[in-house]
Image (cartoon, rainbow, N blue to C red):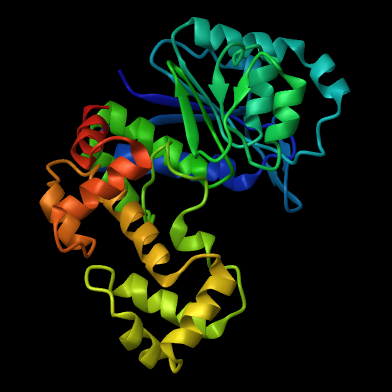
Length: 322
């Protein structure tokens, strides 16, 4: 049977919340030779999109029957677009979502789409994720759910919720990996030029991006040099020389701009890269440690135990078993 993904686009939908996961499933179908059937539905046949755009030629949601084995993804929307009256006016929508789950579909949300799942009662008694700016509001409005902050996505049986915008791509890659194997998921990620595929337990923002929102040109250049040479990063002295600073001055600037020392930044980069590499089929701890610049695999194991309470081999095996 042809695999199928149904997207629900709320009014004022965030375009990447829909287009990002949709592209994952489209590429997955192309690469595995079994194209997905992708249907996009809404309350009306045309919906406004953030950015003064419109999506049109859509199915009406009540024309779409979501069945066993299907994936239903509710996209996020502008948080100021939904006064309480909207939820009162569209009770049949929430029944449609409940019926999809009861039929055996996998039900997902991206970003603020979690509010629609919560209103449908799908998240009662479950943990969930949403955009970090809306986590407090979601928890207050729907106290029967437990909102987890600082994660990319949460999986509770056949209900998955993701955090902000681009994390919908991470969620979609996770679903592709579960259905078709991790190798295909990584092939899709590479095809889409997704820099690092992250799992749900990683923070919402990649360390590769998290510490680049400062104005220190010297520090930015030092960060780029470290990233480009992570398998054999330059010493502090050599790094300082290459960016035209003294070691002491570079250390001070690093701490002021990032809140981290150079060594702590290198450690976090290595950890995220290792976490991604360990999810690849057939990965070996020793090879991953070398690729991340560790002189011995023991260093990587110690770091994993300190951060996750598990060994890298256990985490890699769990990822490949999903």
